[in-house]
Image (tube, rainbow, N blue to C red):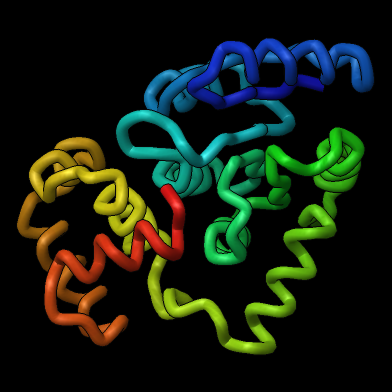
Length: 205
């Protein structure tokens, strides 16, 4: 099995490579950012991608969008420090086959790999319970946002300016500004500062 590991921490990539080698005798390829991940996927055509969301630059959600845009059949498992239902819901809706938090037991990641590799979907048990609860209680104030909007909100929460966001995502400044305006309408807030506050409180970037 060929697996592409995309994470900006070398220690994490090395640990996952060893884990995959022991349990699946997998050949692992590694990337630390969006561009190198796209290049290595094209060259190796791996059977599975293990993707962190918190990458430098455009970020993991943007990579997921680009990857599935070019390779609709790509099997992607999100392996992330972000354990909020919002991220998992958006990633799964965008086409990810699995979502496992980095705080989950290693058995959860192994189960996710086996399930996704065989054609299924997998969400770690704790997060699956939180998703069910959030959808029952409507506690997620950001459910109306698209994948692109969530990514821009995450970057705002990291303190990025609209200019930096437009450059990082490779889209026009005006497009970012328009998306922020749309988010304000959806979330019922008036100022960009309110978007940033929601990002910090809800997304914990």
